Amino acid sequence: MNQDWWKEAVVYQVYWRSFKDSNGDGMGDLQGVIEKLDYIASLGVDVIWLNPCYTSPDIDNGYDIADYYTIMEKAGTMSDLEQLIGAAHDRGLKLILDLVVNHTSDQHAWFKDARSSKSSEKADWYIWQDGVKGTPPNNWRSYFAPSPWTWDETREQYYFHSFASEQPDLNWENRDVRQAIYTMMRWWTDKGIDGFRMDVINLIKKRATFDDVENPLDLSYLGNQPGVHDFLQEMHQEVLAGTDLFTVGEIPFVGPEDGLLYVGEDRNELRTLFHFEVADDMETMDLPRFKQIQKQWYEALYPHGVASQFLNNHDHTRQVTRFGSERYRIESAKLLGLMLHTLPGIPYIYQGEEIGMTGIRFSDPDAYQDVAFRNQYAERIAAGESPGTVLSSMQMRARDNSRTPMQWNANKAAGFTESNYPWMTVNPNYLDINVEAAEQDQNSVLVFYRTLIALRKTHPVMVYGVYRDLAIQDPYLYVYERELDGVTWRIILNLHDEAVTTTLSLPKEQLVLSNYETGDTVQLARYEARLYQY
Ligand code: GLC
Image (spheres, rainbow, N blue to C red):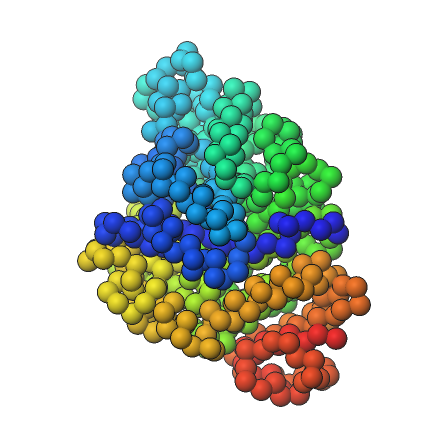
């Protein structure tokens, strides 16, 4: 595999509204991110991915953009962002922005123009269908609403939205739309950003016809349609070719073979991608399935493309809660970290993951602010389900679980804000779980993460090594090797919440890193994770 800086990178995701509030209004902001840049740099990461901070009515926490060229007041100003870019670069950190171009806000000037009349200048910049009010054009569903079609009173037509009705999808078939997007992307790269995290980028190509589908609940008809690669190759040609920009596409509904089409090095599309075979399709850790996924992606991609490794982000509940154990929080947080940083692919750390933050569950449905939660909750209640059942079935996977404020210290509101009213409830466990406490404890998850990230910098085997699963049938142990130029790393993880005995030889002298004090030779404690070098 060719060597490239971005393959060796570790990415840190900053969900700014929950990261650090600098002005006491209860919401994080760009100045707050600047304040904490030294902390981010101290982790050893290379790239910051900043969630959307463009002007937005904030229906979907910034993923409904009303103006790509200005900054949301809650986040700060353009000059704050410029300062952040400069300050990140001063510390050797790259900064990538979210690129949300499958849809805009319904408050974007383009959409206001489009909906004003069927003959307006941008009439065709979105996706419209004739129909009868009250009977949507097909039986599809959107991610966030019962139907992806909303009736517009002025045009007396339906417009299409893969997400909430306030997020109309752009019509990528229109050349002017595409050019407007490429112009905007170039404007941002001229400003000095280092790349893009491309929001649901494989949804930009729609099906050729909007016929009914057999199973509307399987949303895969929304994305990955033939022709999507023409758009991405054009975007590459227009914006990315010849640059050093980092790009990661959010690509739902794809398996490994299709995945390679997005990231194959000879394809001129994206550098890397997020797939959803784990995040969307696995309720809790299903180790046999997880191993299969890793193996299949590795076999399909290497050495022609690179995937990404993540188990949580602002859309998915925190990894300790979902894939590890809150009871054995420290052990399982370290195990998951060790796994993500030694599997093939670029590791992403979602703010707070490095201190083992856990997901919250609210017992009051009104505490959930997320549009996805609220819409789905309302739909199910309207359908006659009981509130208790609906809440308990939605609690575990609710997106707000991972959006609670970053826990900096044991002071008021975890040191996140001076305000008495943080925009979202702080997880009450901040008294124990916070950065300040972790800094003082040599055995903390934080210290372990720093070690992992530092190892990646000095051991190319972690990045380029061949991957081999040594015990694919084992229900509890995940044992794999990475090998490069005569160096072999063997990783042994016990994902069971009880001790497990192994027949593999575990020579103590070759132990590089472990999350337990002593590595027994035949027994692995619950959530024990070890890394050996041969
Ligand atoms: C992506 C984002 C998510 C957002 C959605 C619509 O999945 O990560 O937060 O709601 O796209 O833009």
